[in-house]
Amino acid sequence: MNGKLFGSSGVRGLANVEVTPSLAAEIGAAVATCSKPLKVVVGRDTRTSSAMLEDAAVAGLLSGGADAWQLGIVPTPVLAFLTKRLKADAGIMITASHNPPQYNGLKIFNADGMAYAMKSQDKVEETIRKKKFKRIDWADLGESQRADENRLYAEAVCRKTKLSRKWHVVVDPGCGATYSLAPHILKGLGCRVTSLNAQADGFFPARSPEPNMESLKPLAKVVKCLGADVGVAYDGDGDRAAFIDEKGNFADFDRTLAAYAAHVAEQNAGAVIVTNVEASMSIEKMVAQHHGKVVRTRVGDVYVSEEIKKRKAVFGGEPCGAWIHPQLHYCPDGILTSALLLKTLEDEDTELSEFVVQAPVYPTIRKNVACKNTHKHRIMKQLGDSLRSAFPEHKETSDVDGVRLTLEEGWILVRASGTEPLIRLTVEGESLRTANNIMEKGTLLVKKLVKE
Image 1 (cartoon, helix red, strand yellow):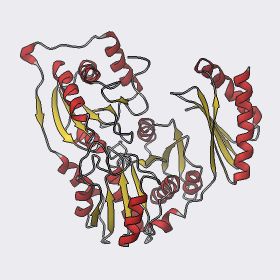
Image 2: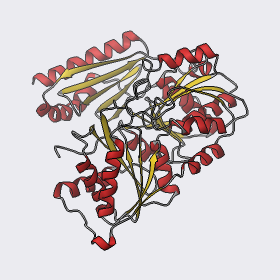
Image 3: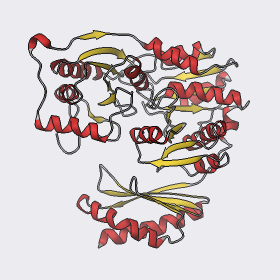
Image 4: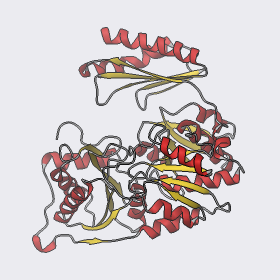
């Protein structure tokens, strides 16, 4: 094991190269050792390597005395929901989410259905590093059983969402984990559903498992051709959703997030909304109209969900389609997001295109500055004071993930890359000219620190 095992979304890497059956078994054994669970639910996405890693993780759990309930192919939010609903002590999801098919990983959830926090991750890593696994006597090994409990999740979503309009929805699961459940639930809500790529295929032959503007061009054509009301696509494990409006246009992630956050804030006076440091300032602009408050976290849904729970926020999300609805659970949930967005459009008596354009759009630019990995820590340590001096008019500073300054007409975020010898700068401005001016000043400062 080289370096830190867990990233912002669990353990992830090339299947059978970095994420091997041996590692999966050790993770299973470490979970059984650290949390001493009696019952663990295990799910997987459709990747070709997922069944292999599932069997290995289950073997590790059984060796530590835990019983494993194997749910088969399920979306990550369903695994998280069922961990709590079935009163399990932990949950393990085999998935690499939106990454290409050659990747895979494991994400661990606690008894509340929340992804393992840093402290729990560190305990698992420490156990693996020291190889201090609890090994049960052969007569007391845990037992495994197959279980299909998707109906519990489907019933919960349908209870939370009642639709009166018969929406024509084109659903594109992309051959991922939502391939069966998403169309089933939307039909249960009364929608007329046209399905694309709704078969399990771990090679993801139809499109990339990451739903973005480029990968969803075929979906956009189908929505427009059929005259459908909306198109929805999910990533490989179903924790993200992306939308196509009734005109066949991709719904911008930031603007859709901001418009929905404003709707939630309007429904909940003084509400707290959580997002990450990279989200557009349009979310503040929209939420402020309804006297809500926006709190920003590090990039990664685990940090957003932790802050939602801590602040008792009503909603949170990241500008990649990962939205968290705490009224049901604390895991990003693409299927639930789809249902709740349709309900919102009904409540506001509008179409998706009209809903999204309520949120302003601001130019965003990004730049990388080469920096040796050995220098990153020094530069980021110096950067805060230097950046504040370079922008004396800043209104707010955040150091939860890099350094982010809120300015009068925009913001700048400077972060050290976790995987490459780079310092990354992101800037958003009320105009392109403003954004370029902020970026120029920030880039000169970072380059100066790199040369010192």
